[in-house]
Image 1 (cartoon, rainbow, N blue to C red):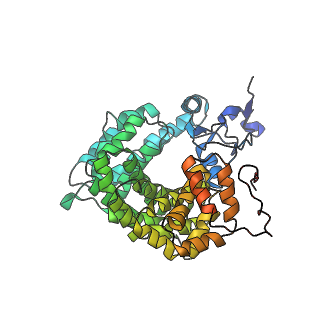
Image 2: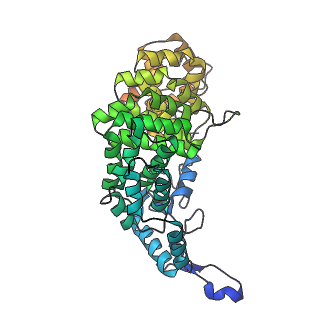
Length: 440
């Protein structure tokens, strides 16, 4: 199959500047040249920003093929990224100008910027901001970025800014700038996993100090983007550090409190920000896998009502699944069950309403929450709220007939006993072996 090339049409007097863009360099959604190409499980490649917005809007199909997506994992298409980078460097009329402009803005070499950050007694903020711009620049070759992060020890040096204490402790501006650099490393498709793990190792060298610094950024950062970047770094630390460092970070009350604040309203109208919600819930879900003491502290600081608020705000499937995982972990301790049952009239219907709208993991987490408070511990407030929740019976029946795990199916069957169906109900003759409820 031969792919046609499309051209940028210019007026006749500028026709000599016309640039031919291969069609497969364009994102099928935005139709712009892709900056960060990623592929879905259907094999179609999109620009990361465009397909992420599509998925965050609650869509569960491939935009190009309209086929359902069994997985929403985004796999970086490094081959296509390299081809686009090569094309941009050799074919774009602005390539030379862009390179010269970038070099004129950058006042120091990347290696010298790293040395400036490592120097004691000096404010690292200016050098860190230049490093963040360098690592986020798509015109910089990935090989050079990897060399700087790996052999140049940029990751370890920048991470050390977050670990400084006493008189050497960096300002909030400096810590924020360091967080932005590390977040750029972690988020880059072109940087090797081995180099990304250097970030986790640098933060884990003193996990309590790193967690405290990230909390400072989330509390006093200059904008929401900086707060989200700090939460992403905390999640990366929890996912990649050794167990001891992971527990130390998870038990930071300061960090947990700021994560809960991050998933809260961002204005007086009570609006929730999608990126902040996703980042905060992801990190809280990672903390859920730590010790019981950390989960109890998370509950004490208000994780349960915050997660319920996210569910009631009709968050996207991914955010809802994470909120349900947080609740599933919370009801594993007495404090969490008490917090959920105290607001059962709002919490239980919220869990029921998102049961079939949060993917398989979210559905199973929702059933586990309901089973814990309604069946195992038999809280009357929760049981009454579940029985009265609109669509609860139908959703449980759908889950039983879906491809859920045996444990989730058993919990759903036990929850069904709460519902009493009278003779006038359209479901009075339900038989789990012969009746099939179609999705709606």
